[in-house]
Each structure stands twice: as structure tokens, then as C-alpha cells.
Length: 112
Length: 116
Image (cartoon, rainbow over all chains, first blue to last red; front, side, top):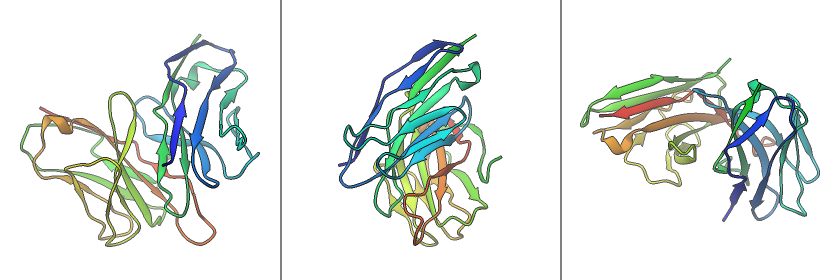
């Protein structure tokens, strides 16, 4: 079946550091890939998405590229801020069901 | 700003009570979902709906039930709450139809439920 594996946290960085959160997936065919972010006390917000191979999703300085050859969708940001502290979820969906398969989440803490 | 609303945000209640968690969306989305989020952050799909009068069990077995009488409303009910039901419950919705496959889900802020 479909699955998503993302790097375990927690991840702690200093402000302006470079961020990478790894995400790999297992799926048949061509899933759509997503990164969601959950700030403390809130629900999930879509951060970025990519729907086909080699697509790059980007938003708020975050980027992720859909790599079919490595079945990966790693999240990157060049310079993190304290306000980026949150839990990040990688997810995929496939077919017409729109059911999401989530990774287990990675908690990021950015210190001033 | 949220177009999907969950109430209450927090609920602390005793064992054996009947509970209904409300979820409403104003986006006209056909598909709606309920997730249970455990303290370790992992999300589990417990119910979903393709539209009015459609309800399906999710990947994680749950003692809760749902109904979908109106497009915009997808309440979740626990007939007799137990401490094991303590969790955060997140509602989501997404668009569905020709040409909009794999659309992202939009989430509410969640209900944090504690059963004493």
C-alpha cells in the first residue's frame, strides 16, 4: 500500500540556519505530494504541493521537488525564522479518493 | 482565515457522556474527513464522506459515528465517551470532480477532547 516516511524529529535549529526535512514515499503510479504545517494549537495548513514528477512546490521560502527516481519530496528552506517553529507533515494522495496518507510529522523548533 | 470551523475547540467531560463534535465548511466541498491525532502527532483517518448521505470508515477503527445530511456539515458523535477517546480531532474538506483530482485538504483548527 501507499506510505510516507519522514525524518524523525525533533529538529532544533538556530535562526537563519538551513533546513532540510526528508520525506520519501511508496506508491504505485503517480501520486500528488504535499507538505502541511501545524502551528501550536492549530489545525494543519497546506504549505506546498506538487502533482507530477520534477514539479517544484514553493511557499513562504520553503521548497520541495517531486523526485520520482528517488521517490522523495524533501522540504527545504534556506534561512529559518523563529516563526517557522511548528510540526511539518509530508503527505501523498492518489487516485480520485483524495484520501491523504501522512508521515508521522517532524517537530521543528527554531531558537533566536 | 478558516473556511472550515470546528466547535468546541476544547472539551473536558466525564465518562459515559454523549458528545457531538461539530464541523462546518463554507467552501461547498463535497468531500469531508475526520482525523484523530494522537499525542505523538500522528494523524489517523477515522471517517470520510464523498457527499450528502455518504459516510465511510477510515483507516483507524473508531467507536465514533458520523452523519452527512447537509453538504456543509459533518458532525462526529461519541455515544458514550471513555478516557481512551481523549485526543485531538481534526476535520478537513476537499473539492472533488472532473479535473480536480488530488486536491489539497483544508483543515479546521481541531477539537481537543479530554475524557475524565
